Length: 297
Image (cartoon, one colour):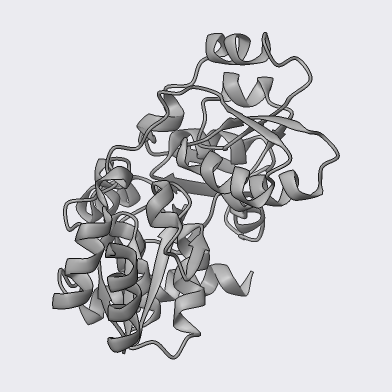
């Protein structure tokens, strides 16, 4: 059986399997660690594993390589990338900074290692407000997600200057989606990700990262939830809270790159220890500094 072979290879290679919440159910089921991108990379760094297999997209594996420089980081699908992360390059950011030399640069972790390396500090969707409010600078360049930047701007006195990037999955949600989802489930709590458009955030009962969504579901007395993030999250939620009901805000909220990983590709990656993800040391060192500054906050 394919799953049994994967578990055998994992032991032989002294590997740890990291799986993002947006992966398919069969991939989530083989995870050693399941969660958000940064929490996975941090957890992997604390393990004794020699190999880190990341079921996610490219920037996530890069972060794992940055935080675990002595481990071999591999991805089952080399072509799994994040379109939002590709909406800004390091050179884009360098030129943008020249126009606003007094501004601090806050970089959402959903970005390439090169962009992190050109930033002052990183943030997650959960701690973006806290990170921005920790800065002494009055102006903040926020890359690459304009929607998360807008959400943060509502909770700070700092002037936020957003880069015009977005997650195509979350940016597609509309007020009409909210209406269609709420009509058959009027008692359900609406939980959305801050990568959603402002008008969708305005309609939500709560706004959370994926980890925050999971935590809320586990603690809430509610029995029904409409989930405004990538549909893979619903699989985990149902598994973690089987007595509760979960409805997608839109069935079309699918990250195609997240779905490229298959069990067959995981098996092959563990057999060959390829494709390997390597971040050049100078880039990794500067990116790590931005991540560590965030963790210090």
